[in-house]
Length: 186
Image 1 (cartoon, rainbow, N blue to C red):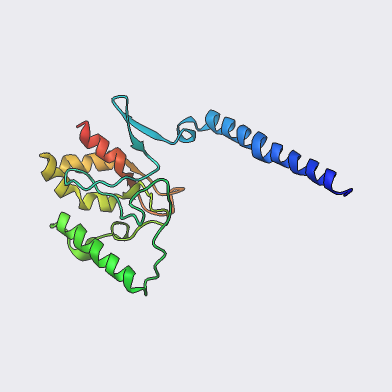
Image 2: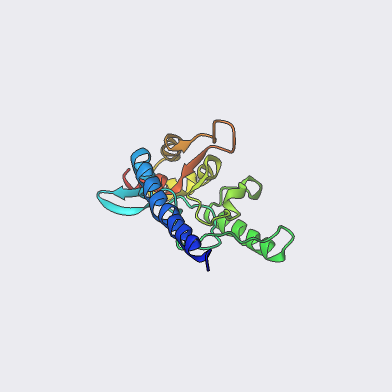
């Protein structure tokens, strides 16, 4: 019984520090240093919220750039990949389905040219970005559907690309929502 009161006191102190004070301090600091990101990196068009630049969305119309496949259909209340091994027959079925879908939407592309980010889901299922190569492979379809020159679509891609992580890791990439917003306001 002698240990109960100090144990309860210590529990309440840690609840206060770690459950209230620490989160409030971190939220305050993040709002000061990274205000846009702390509020969810929301993207607006003409004062209307259209999405977040850190959570992918599904675009299916030919006039839009398409993001990578999502195991959770871009449901932001969930997060997760397929967790299927390459040896799993379900993985092969999904891969074949994604290849077929990509080629049907982009008939000028050869199967061996399709980057892996257009065929496989990300670990979170919410990835908002694709590689620049993936975007450029969609340029013909997007240009034709929007009635603009492929060169103009490629300029939009090039003006929206982000560099490699720390200048060394990964590939150049583009945010699909931001690309499509540029097309919308073209």
